[in-house]
Length: 349
Ligand SMILES: *Cc1c(COP(=O)(O)O)cnc(C)c1O
View 1 (cartoon, helix red, strand yellow):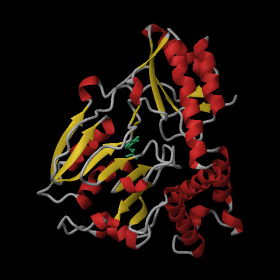
View 2: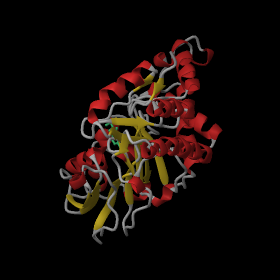
View 3: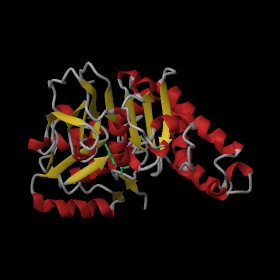
View 4: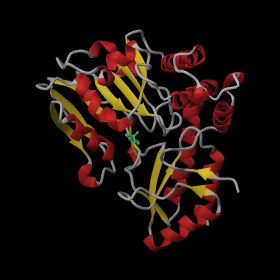
């Protein structure tokens, strides 16, 4: 049976990427060796790493002072390493709390300096994106999450601030064109919209680094990773290769086309959610995410039946996160329109 993977993460990857990854495990570029067996200092892997950095630069049109690195530890490690590298102990960072992930980032940052939560939608179970808040003039940076994977909300407008804006794009990176220089730092765990789990992509304006006065050991110092082109220690070669293949796929399609396809998928599903009396969306309409659509049944007793129906028709990963309940349809770049059509058909019953 054809499977339609609506999982929030680790998530769907393009079939062509999976096929190339699978081939690379058996025989990487006709070397007679697996990519899993090759030295990260050898020409072939160095070349692969170079292209993985260069494609990010190209797709985001990055100027020279912006650096690209592939790190480990998942986004969660960087909840801590970002303030460790960029927030002096006696300075203040402004954070917007729009869900579980920013909430965690706030708690990590408190270890490294003053944290001011300038806006939060916690009071409404994070079902909207706060707007019109003030950022203190002395803030080192403003931290936001562009897409709230669990709650199905998405930042649609660049926040206003007189300081650099740092953004967690773990679940919507490369889902649409962005103006990267609007941000001082962009980062994303790989396993949602970028590739296999195992690496975190981080893009930073180099001029912001090295100002904390901390003596940072190299492995935790972004400058050391930049200097060694993401190979300070053994990098997660396989994950980065998966990201590279996905980046090539993105380049071939074009970010504008990917954005249009994402909009079409989300439009189809939200139209059905709003039309169908058996379902209702949980996120504020103006803040709805194109990546993760959250919805519930108007009669809760119908939910298990609908889940079962989905399962019988090849739809997987659609059960909502426990903090929202109901359903969450994640529609990352690699998910085809056909999958959403199948889902909508089932909702129509
Ligand atoms: C999944 C996710 C994270 C956490 O990523 P890990 O790699 O599991 O640490 C952080 N932020 C957002 C927006 C996410 O969707």
